[in-house]
Amino acid sequence: MTSLNIITPVKDSIDSTLETVKAIMASNISVPYTYTIYNDFSTPENTRRLEEASKKYGFRLVNLSDLTTHPSPNYLLVLQRVQAECIEQNAGMLIVESDVIVAPHTLQALYDGALERKDCAIAASVTVNDEGAINYPYEYARGKENQVFEEKKHLSFCCSLLTPTFLRKFDFHNLDPEKNWFDVTISHQAAKEGMKNYLFTNLPVIHRPHQSRPWKQLKYKNPLKYYWIKWTKGFDKI
Image 1 (tube, helix red, strand yellow):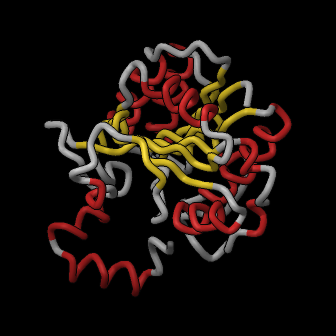
Image 2 (cartoon, one colour):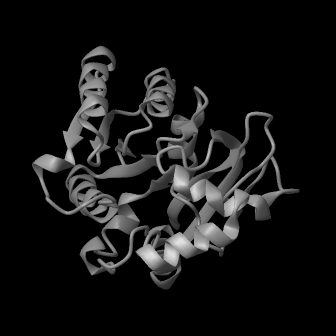
């Protein structure tokens, strides 16, 4: 692994996305990297804001409406495209979602940590709230702060680095196209390939869950309504 391909998939929620962008662009990164935002059918106004931000901050913007007519979410298409780029470039795929704010040292430290572990498939930062307490989706890691350890449960893609060694082992075209999200499947696949996933609780990132899909916040406020929407409309297939 000689570089990073940092990506942020986005659908609307541009204010929180710009916080993500500012933190990434202010990071202290010594390894070569590219940063790309994949705009997944945001509104015309929000697409315009992303285009303006790309000129201001210097990230690459890919409008998925130029590539597909498939309705959002298009996470699978993004993963497949970026996997091919990473394999060609010997780059790590570093996913930072649009409701996450990294610290200045986070991305370089994740790269260094993954590089130090030859069996590493995925290196993930633990998520915390604005007060610094571990939050969704890593509640199970509470009590294990300031550590690095192998995690046999799945890792979220909130802020996660997938190594090129792993990307060469498993073709994302084999993922189930009926699903919306793939962190569980890909995490489990890493173990099947004989590799390990590591959670870095010493590299916390701020996570404000579901900023781009507000209906998912019903999971905490009104779980009955959340599951009704999830199952009747076929949303959120993991």
